[in-house]
Image 1 (cartoon, rainbow, N blue to C red):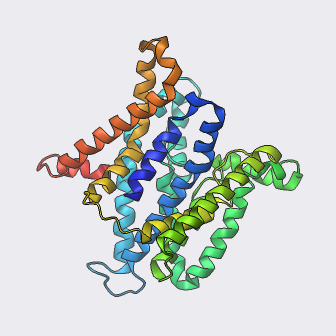
Image 2: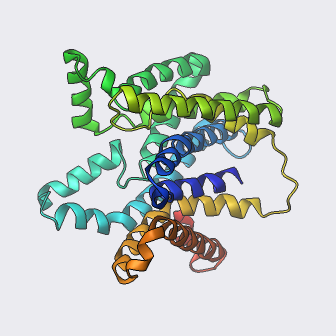
Length: 345
């Protein structure tokens, strides 16, 4: 259920759903609420990866630790490859057909960006997650999750000053040169090492600890954390020159207490939670297709459509993404097409 709600927030952010109501509502949605969505996805992924992987070399269920890691990464790579191929048409259109990148450089650059940043803007999730679970797999037994979390936090701080806090260091020669090199090589500090790793390790730790907040307390702390994150965002807007608002301190407590709330809430509704979980994945990865489609038909909708354009964009993209999700999940049980669509989620 939580992942489904988060996927709708992602669509709202990428369609700028509140832009028609003015700058400030859109800014708050995009840079306060929506900035916690992907970190929470990472924490949930880390939680279930480490929980299912186990901590011993004996078999946990059907797989040993190593077997589960290779099974998991193979599966993620397959899904990543399929979605990368789906979006390849737009990458070629933007960078090759526009003449910005020669064809001889397009393929090696595409492979490089696919490894360090992601082949499309929402697909950065895959290389970041794969990097993070690999680090956990290799180091968690050697140094423990506590030390690994502290190391990941150190890299997260580095990521902050290359993102939301960049305005505080851009005029310090040595430090600004360091970040300019990072930008040249990796484009952003929103990546596996300086952003995702911390949340994936945090989720892994939560899978091994019995500490659980009551839902009411977790909800209270979550609301307080969101308020503090809003203060941080507006302070950065006033006193810094953020490259973006991806890597911020306030995202950490919001993610932690939101996940605690998710773990503590026992929903009594008789919904198909597996369907919601699977559809959330498809919505997350497919919605840019329908953003592109909406932009194609927008010129034919007429001037009367402009007043609430962002709202219509959000509704259209959400409905089409959800419709695709329903279709794909139903096709999963098809004898001939089931194997094919299984690579989408």
